[in-house]
Length: 47
Image (cartoon, rainbow, N blue to C red; front, side):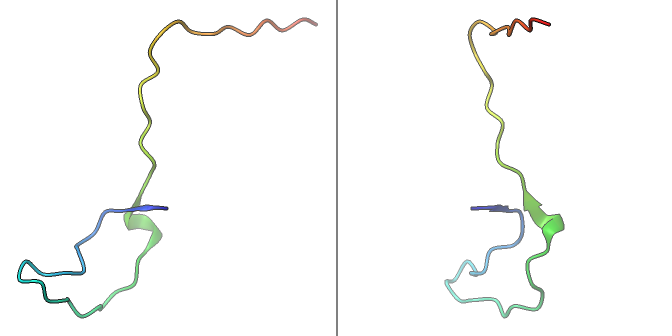
């Protein structure tokens, strides 16, 4: 599911706005990046 950063489809009174524009990729947000707590894992690469 994508995060959409645009106006809601519903008014404060409960009515619906008429859709003038479609959803564009420029108004879609990204998934949140959560902080990683604890020790960092190091990978040992042998060549």
